[in-house]
Picture 1 (cartoon, helix red, strand yellow):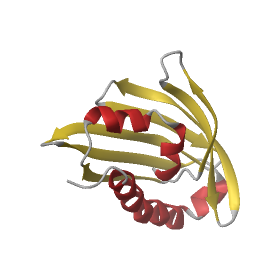
Picture 2 (tube, one colour; picture 1 turned 180 degrees about the vertical axis):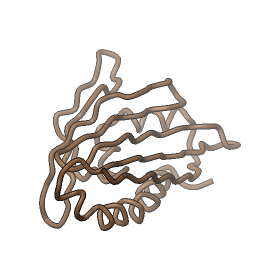
Picture 3 (spheres, rainbow, N blue to C red; picture 1 turned 30 degrees about the vertical axis):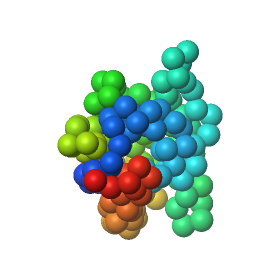
Picture 4 (cartoon, rainbow, N blue to C red; picture 1 turned 120 degrees about the vertical axis):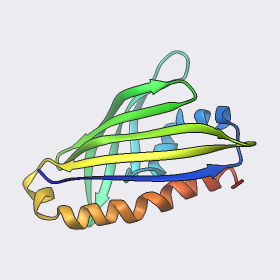
Length: 146
């Protein structure tokens, strides 16, 4: 099946603690990596996001997907396995200090799963690749840029 990887790095004028806290909020994921709406999020007793369902809107159609924890290193890395009927992959956010702010790197790897996605993967891939930098920059801009 066809696959593609994307990444984007930016800097926010917020502490790692503030950026990490935002990553624990389900609504944050609506603006990162092709997730248009988060539903049915699960958090643990300490408020850590554990999983969520999401919708991705493509050509007017909503595709329901699931995000489950792939890897987590507090204040450094949060990664999710993502899957829906057409696409599977991993999205990860890595945080490092950058002066008084935080460097945010988002990596996204996707591959097609279904016949429809395989036929239109070039279009899907371009849409994801074009949208990732905008969404990551918008997330960082919510804190202000350094």
